[in-house]
Image (cartoon, rainbow, N blue to C red; front, side):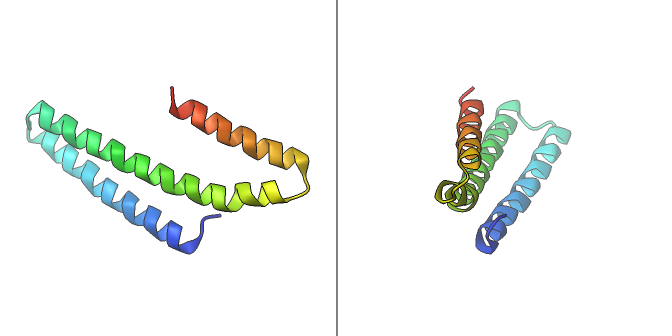
Length: 92
């Protein structure tokens, strides 16, 4: 579960990204120069990476910390496995 401040930040960033994507759609509709469209797509990708980093930070500070401090070894190993899996997916 996301803490209130982090949730607000993530939602604000996602709303901004949504608007940015709509702008890219208009650019395509208006036959904007391809390189300009690509630059805007790249900006959205970077913004999404920022959202991902916020969500990961929240997850590490809540769910993972709870599992590591807890006595359930299986849950702790599951959480660590999830984190390793996410990082593996990100580097592909």
